[in-house]
Image (cartoon, rainbow over all chains, first blue to last red; front, top):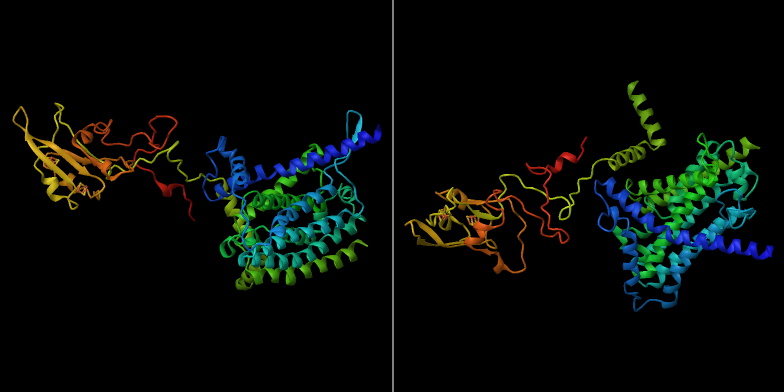
Length: 328
Length: 188
Ligand code: SF4
Ligand code: SF4
């Protein structure tokens, strides 16, 4: 009996998480277009629903009913596989992400995470790394020069930015003496890591921008020079899958930033429910992503590489050395 | 000394991404500024300046008679040759137009007809929504020019937005003297 209840709870949590993550792009696209509009003194979507609130739904219906086009020369199997490969890893990563401490509902202890891996951080980085396969396959299978160029760029970008990103969190691991995200958050009850690790935060956040392929590092899908990069040839539902994965990665990077550097669900000053604190912080970073997008121009490719290898990598290495000396 | 300070300041600014922060502050400010968008057919409508030259209309005098004396001066001066006037004599013995047609498809809205008219009978109003699917519909006859709904009364002012399919409301233009696009655009 207990086993069944435990199993049921896990299944419920997984289903809830997947549903939330799948539906998340709807409000996020609306928000992004509104923010874009108002930053450019426009109004953004206004027609469908109150202040365009139903616009994402209309867009979704449009995408679902569009022709699912596959280019004649494409590698059909990889072409169909790529969006799924891009979508699955960000979802898998969320299995290891805690949203709060244990709460008790109806006398049952329910944990606000699906699993508490003791190597969660490693797991997160390993699985995020897989996402790049979707992008590479997508670009390659489409057999279009723009798509291939887009994937090549993504490939190089991911390799150069995942290294500093991984190094940047070593300081956090040193502070918490653990790789479990739960322990990392618990270690920040008094002081958030960003106080001890400003450089680490900076490197992580910039690399995270690159990882989520957001402006100013969205070279893989630079509309201006590449059509749309790796998803130039995608249409309809497959394109929608790429979009969903992009938004989920954006949320993921925000969540990771909050957990690793901004104390997770630990609040300051105002006593709010921990989960609310957590969501507020994540929302702030999501907003930051959008704010950046409509403020900065895109970096040139050589600048992107220079920032990755000449600025972020040395900075993250220096951060490790300094943290090692100071905190040991 | 001050140059050195300047340089140091600039270096500090560069190291802490002062320029990026500047850009962010600017966009943040814009986010809470008033949008310049005009929600054209549904909610708002632009009322043109009073000197705007839009759709023509013919005026009536105090007794409700058409003012035009069919002198054909407007037809003569029109650079596009798009006015056709055919005179006749009415019961009172006045010369009036039997036929008065303006081909607005050819008209370039120069306003010369208005200037040339000795009887102050024709004028260009403010209506600008009269596109049509056929150029033949754009040939406007005498009665239409006289009787465009509310046209002569409002001085040819703007009437309801035609693209609005839901309600047949008269859209209030918010600024009677014309819309100043530049007012809402902040500049340094
Ligand atoms: S506005 Fe100019 S072009 Fe148009 S009818 Fe009058 S004179 Fe002719
Ligand atoms: S509108 Fe004026 S200019 Fe033209 S025919 Fe009539 S009176 Fe003459």
